[in-house]
Image 1 (spheres, rainbow, N blue to C red):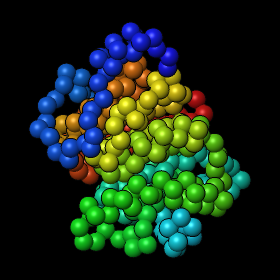
Image 2: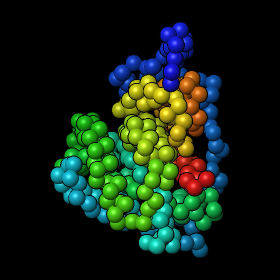
Image 3: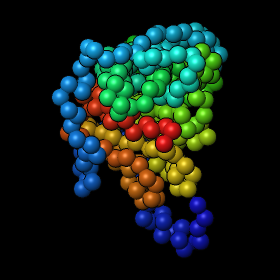
Length: 290
C-alpha cells in the first residue's frame, strides 16, 4: 500500500497494531460483531453414517531433513481416491498439547469429510495432519509450553519436508489455489503465521481459536492489497475462550484494512466442540476451483 505522510498518520491512528508478545489470557470482552457467521450444524452432522462411501485415514512416515529424524503424519484420502485424479490439499495443524492424531481424537475429520462429500457440500480433498512440534522428540511430554520453539521451527519442516513428501506420494494439485492451511490453538497461530506469510504457497488460511504464538496483526498483514490475493482468510473462536482477544485483534485489523475474511464466533470455549464445528464449516468454504 502507498500512503502520503498525512494518510499514513490517519491510517496508523485508525488501525493500531496490538503490542507483542500477545497475552496468554485476558478478560473476555465481547464486541458487537462477535457473532456466529454460520448456524449450529444440523443433527447428526458429526456422526459416522452407513450407506455412504468412506475415505481412508493412513499414518505415514517421512524423512524430515530439517529436523534430522523420521517423522509421522496422518493423511485422509477421500472416497474413491485414485492416483489418476489430482486433488486439492488441506494441511491441518494441532494444538500445543497435541500431535498428529489430535484432530482424529477431537473431531474425526474423516467422518466430517465423508458426510459432507456425500452431501455434495465439500469437494473431495486430501487432509494432511502432521506433527507441528518440529523436534527430535516430538511427543507432548512434560511442560508442553517448553516446546513452543519447535512449533515455530515447524515452518521449515512444513515447507521443506511435509509438503514435498505429500506432493511426491499423492496425486495433488500442487499450486497455491489448491492448497489450504488451518489449525487449532497453537496450530491456528502457526497457520496464520505461515499461511499469511507465504501467499505464494497458500490461497486458503484458517485460524481456529488462535494462540499467543500468533504474530502481531501488522506483521501478519502488512499489505492490504497483498492480503486480498487470498481466496479465504478464516478466523473463528468461542465466546467463552480466554484467548478470543487474539482473534478479535486480527479480525479488527483485517476489517480496518478492508481485507475480506470470515469472522465466526460461537458460544463454545477453548475445546473440541468449537474446533469440530469450525472445521465443519471451514471445509465447506474451500471451493478451490471456483
